[in-house]
Image (cartoon, rainbow, N blue to C red; front, top):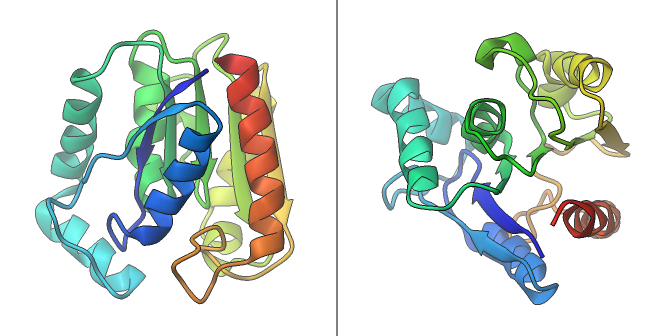
Length: 191
């Protein structure tokens, strides 16, 4: 079984994140869900990103690093949207990474150096999500797939950014079911 460090999106830690983590736990995985926002939650992406900017991206990343430092090596790093930043950074820079799961976002590999040899990765996004498709994330994901020896990009029909968050109106149950199947197979393989 895998040990997963799962970072929340710009709305903060919410019921959808916990439901996702609980589904992974029910399959036998250990899942840690640190709070990058120190107890704050937001109603919109813009509000959450605004808080992250005000706090400082460096501090948000440092909070992710501190959460990882309390855990052993050998983690799968996962993140939803804003949470992809610390997840991808840690997968690329912290020794012992078992894998990475990047939901709704991807950063150019060069942002954190190189993709480590032997670290598998999956990127999941909606094929008409204006954030994922139009702000460079899908391009970064395609680059990652080209660079890494074990990388997959999965696109789901839809235009919602947070389609796998069951607590939000953007939730797509069919897409999430397929995403979860792929994630569980990945965790089984790398665990």
